Length: 293
Image (cartoon, rainbow, N blue to C red; front, side):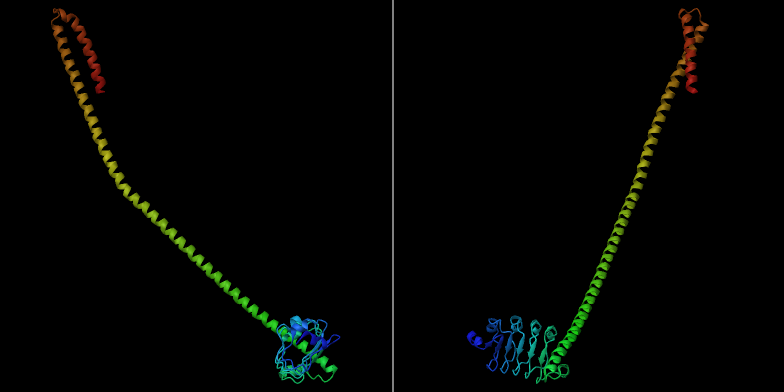
């Protein structure tokens, strides 16, 4: 619909588009007329409201959609915060959006001649005069608030259940992680004990292999020592025997000279030799005594 035609239908703040054979709402053209806060769309063939109807026309105070073919009302109708008057008489509505609970300024509502559910019919009541239409608006907003509250409660309950499940899942996951950590720690301790046991067994084996070798070395060393001792002892005995024999021979010779010179004093060399032989004999006896003691 041209913008110029809309202006022709504007009187003050009321725009009358009734009986205009409309099957949709010209939201774009209506936005260009922000002064039109009271909109009459009655007696047309409108079956649904555009998605941007409530977002772009949120300045509307009165909307008349009576005697159209509406089957539903946008769920975001609560965005029409300034709406005071809503006429939905003679449409095809069976239900209403919960978002109506946010229409805090709604003072007048007509829902007659709609195939509403029995529950909504009882809540809405009749709208035969101003008082009843005001009561209809008041009752419907209050009812939708209860519905919204129940939905919020159920939503919160669902969130709590999901949160509880999530916490339970996390707790189970944490227990599983702890179990895996405990198993890993136990496995590490087991491997450590096995390693220590293997090291101890290895040291014991090395010790057992070392003892016979040390014993054999000790025996060999003792054998060598015995042989060396025997050699030293035998060598010492041989040397002593030889020395003793020499001393005895010397003593015998000296004794022979002594007795010879003692019997032949007239021999010249015996005069001095007798005394010398005696001295040598005395010295030899001392040496023999010292050795034998």
